[in-house]
Length: 82
Image (cartoon, rainbow, N blue to C red; front, side):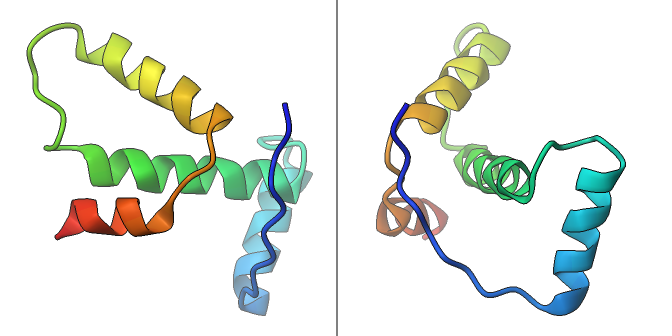
């Protein structure tokens, strides 16, 4: 899977917390921590947007799969919060 590279600047304290998550084995790398955080943010923004008409667990799994494979348009995500 081809992924884009994104550079972010974070406060030293946040980087320390990310490193702690990696050191404890919860995540294998800083990148894994940040990818999971972004996925969770995107899913959080989608809560209330999804219609509850079926198997919501299945819908969320499909969204997570889709988000992990596609480029994310942050402008579109920000529109969800409006």
